[in-house]
Amino acid sequence: MPDVKKVVLAYSGGLDTSIILKWLIDTYKCQVVAYVADLGQGEELDTIREKGLNTGASQVIVDDLREEFVRDYVFPAFRAGAMYEGQYLLGTSLARPVIAKGQVRAARATGGDAVSHGATGKGNDQVRFELSYQALAPELKIIAPWREWDLGSREALLAYAQKHGIPVPVTKARPYSSDRNILHISFEGGILEDPWAAPPEDMFLLSASPQAAPDAPQELTIAFAQGDAVALDGQKLSPAALLARLNELGGRHGIGRVDMVENRYVGMKSRGVYETPGGSILRQAHLALEGLCLDREVLRIRDNLLPHYSELIYYGYWFSPEMELLQSMMDKAQEPVTGEVRLRLYKGNVTVLGRRSPNSLYRPDIATFEADTVYNQADATGFIRLSGLRLRIRHALQQAQKANS
Image (cartoon, rainbow, N blue to C red; front, side, top):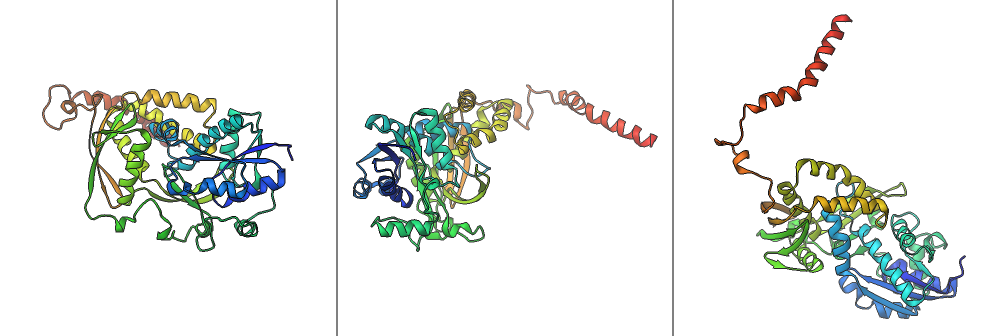
């Protein structure tokens, strides 16, 4: 057990970190600073300062990171088109490095000599937090309570909380854990551990069900500059304000629900349910504009690298040299992605109605099915024959082999 004097804990006020706060004080006989990263949890933070102090924290720091989170983490990932295993928009994965960076700042400001987190020994978050700590402040000691204590289940945690008078939001009536920020909310564990069981409707917090969404569709226009959304319906907004507004619109129309079984970095499969209303709208709009502005071969190379880029985020390598290299390439590719996309939101669907850009590579005078003077269709004959040369050679070889057999 390391000798520590002050621990800066990534504190959410939820089941795990509420108990960890008390456990750290009792086990390490040290001061604990409860570090709360405000990433857009909303009303969840209303009483968190009081709760942390009542549980024994020597200090509670509530750090508003919403703009930093969206500007420096969410938007770079969306510029690249990041998506893990074809469905997950990485809301939790992107939050961990910004929280860790804030923790390190807090440790240096308060004289902390250790950092701690509430991630279990089975999940991805332990890797994300600890790789970030090591990249940013390797001198700090790391305490991972889930890998040390004997509280091995949610039931044990609930019993511990009851014994020590710690109020927690997870109960036997709502036996699943959630993680919320301005990009999404995730749910896992408890009743969701049966992949055949449908998530209960009352679990969802950010989105209406598509069936209950308005019967009238809604249209909107998003403007982009070099791959980043900068305005909504002609109004310029900061990154966080724009995403928050899209969350409202998308949630109202039942957009952004995902229920998937994913592969964790440690090797097991896990079921996660996500709500990402604003992010889902942004992704569709961004893809539409890329189709207009990006060169075919640039897009192909980007898409080939995208699974690896997304895995780096999911696995916790945000602060790595390979991530810096890929991000610089992704950002270079996005330089021409400027323009506007018009969308329709309706009962869980995002439909692209139109797109335009000063950097458009689309040429109506070339693509038209009507008569034109800029494209000689007869040129395609030689192109197709050259493209088929290897196929004809292969066929000739096959025929010769059959004749000799």
